[in-house]
Length: 298
Image (cartoon, rainbow, N blue to C red; front, side):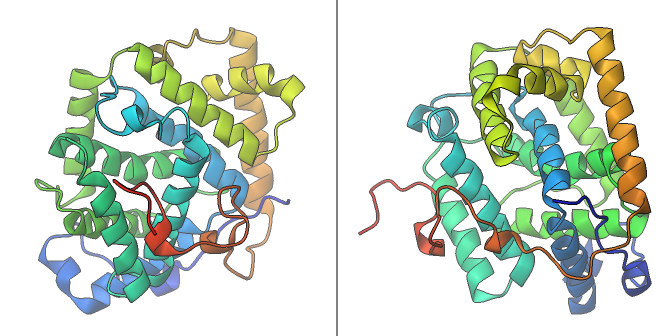
């Protein structure tokens, strides 16, 4: 599948100029622009999405309490289903927008799943931050172009509004404050634990499956993925750093990819995530059946 840049709509986004998401995001026009940015950037080409997926592994870089999601096997034994459920829940929200019945049903389904576990507010907040910042960083380093400041604000504001609907408290009102909070949290919480490695291994396997990486090349693919991680992230997973030649080769390949992708013309239509073929739901899905349940749905 060819690599293609995502939409460039800054002329349409330009009116979204507020530096933060305080009271401004309550205005319907601002919400609409934030959702438009969120929907467009959520429909990235598959290779950009999976690179961002490797980056969001950073959410797992702190000791995982297997008294919540991991104890049900969702993080280590049913990783593909968890990945597919996450893709589809966020797709319903991103493509249709909060306030649409399907998007609101997806939020309700997500909140119901989370309510059964003891999850700290700061853990919710950090997970939200990975969905905000890691795609921004991945596109800046490896994508066809970085998000513009306007896109970054819209992306953040859309996720902040989602955080409000999830009941997350102490949500920052601007990107700079959120980034500072995130960095302080990582310094305090990011460290190795065996559970980190187990969950990271399972998640990486799912990403390789999505990218159709042949089995005989997965050892090399793992080294390539680790080379894309920040050193402290690899350390928190217990992964030894690849040798300098592998890191240099990956940097060269990703720089070449970035150059080629940036030279290609924009694609003309969105590739909706909700229409992707996903292994867990080969024949389609129902929102009310996504995710986990205290008891299986009838």
